[in-house]
Image 1 (cartoon, rainbow, N blue to C red):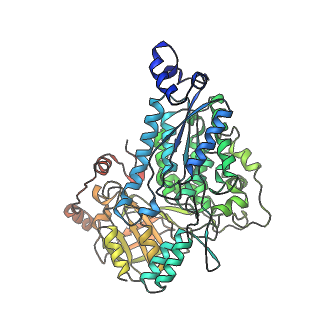
Image 2 (image 1 turned 90 degrees about the horizontal axis):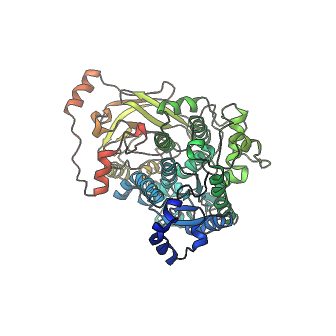
Image 3 (image 1 turned 180 degrees about the horizontal axis):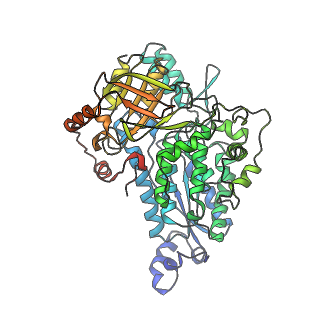
Amino acid sequence: MDLKHKSRALTEGPERAAARAQLKGIGYDDEALSKPLIGVANTWIETMPCNFHLRALAAKVKEGIREAGGTPMEFNTIAISDGITMGTEGMKASLVSREVIADSIELVAAAHAFDAVIAISACDKTIPATVMALCRLELPSVMLYGGSIYPGQYNGERITIQEVFEAIGAHAAGRITDEELTAIEDAASPGSGACGGQFTANTMAMAFQVLGISPFSSGVPAEDPLKSEVAKEAGRLVMDVLERGERPSDIITREALENAVAAVACSGGSTNGVLHLLAVAAEMGIELSIDDFDQISDRTPLLCDLKPGGRYVAPDLYAAGGVPLVLRRLKEAGLLHADARTVTGKTVGQHADEAQESEGQDVVRPLSNPLKSTGGLVILKGNLAPEGCVVKVAGYERRTHTGPARVFESEEDAMAAVRAQGIKAGDVVVIRNEGPAGGPGMREMLAVTAALVGEGLGEHVALLTDGRFSGATRGLMAGHVAPESVRGGPIGIVRDGDEITLDVDARRLDVNLSDDEIAARAADYRPPERQVSSAVLAKYAKLVSSASLGAVTR
């Protein structure tokens, strides 16, 4: 490949003098402009710990690019923190931001004729968004994950943001004092980096390492002293990928996506893994359905003892042997497409063979002693979820739940009932009108689910929503259903007291109503009118697809 296969059109010839003049004015000399131009897409922002440190990492990435003979050009994009906006109207922007981030990276990289791109991401939506953009650009590319935060310490125990959300519920129930809640709040987030459990950020970071678009060194924690060298090496790596002429379509194949799904299932990862991998598949034009996740999870053992359902956090996984160790287990089980390529130049099978397992570690179980014989995700279907319902089964043992519906038209209504201790053991909490179009934005319900756990109801209730819950709460049986209520989803016809059954083994989610009754209610149902004051949310609501298709906007 001509290393300046795109940028020659921007920088060479007499007719490009004006462009060169402007670039020279900000420090790019003739030598710099004669080299390949490498876009450094940074998602740095000061609104959250996840991405707070990425400016420093980008500087190291650029050093690596220069050392390898390229000219880096850094540009920034937006980021929305799920953890900080959770429980507010701001959370509606989270999933929307995935599309805006992908769009913005695509626009800048294409318009400025970069020869290759390295994207630096860290939080829940920047990770899939950057990869979606790289898929669209089809340039030699690398995605570098900024790394996980270290756990905090409280009363001699390690804690994460999960414990704060649960403490909010415990506080509302009078189980802890104001002082205890503040002490937990002060301890839980001790620095920079993404939330430490196998929540969405670490789920997607693992998935994209396994997918092959992100180097395995990405697993180094955010504040580990080694992270700077990891960033510099990533800069050198993107130049190597350019020299090889390797594009995302060479890496992201159906087999690679199946590997990524298996890693999500094996690790007890977030249900958002379904949403985001479906979106990546759509960007690449690869057929992948929600049913594939169920089939792969069913044959994949749950091996990683990670929060929220387990004991450990991402830095523990890194110390134990990291994602390569997970690959080794999948390969041993015959569940890995070992020949799938990665940006490192090696196959995933080679990385699996090179894994170094720490002596005595029990973060990643051996195949002979799994946490469960099947993976952490299941897909239910039935008269309440004709397009599917994603349920995370890692972290609890219940296989069925039948109970009366408690119906809420918004997250706020449900949270008010939780705070008033209006939810009882046995209930099925139904939160609707929070889907991709109906929210709009498909808000995540961690504040509600964690509060239920904090009140001691986690093992005794179930939750359904056309929004998201991500599975980031231990012990609670919860699912997000499609289609959503505002697009005719049957979740819209449920009334207080209707009997709902979730049956994991049968893969069923049903309300105990006749087909005629469901049809009659559907004919009468009108979703509540909501004023969408934000232009970007209104545009998103018109364009976004069903969650069962990845909630994409094209």
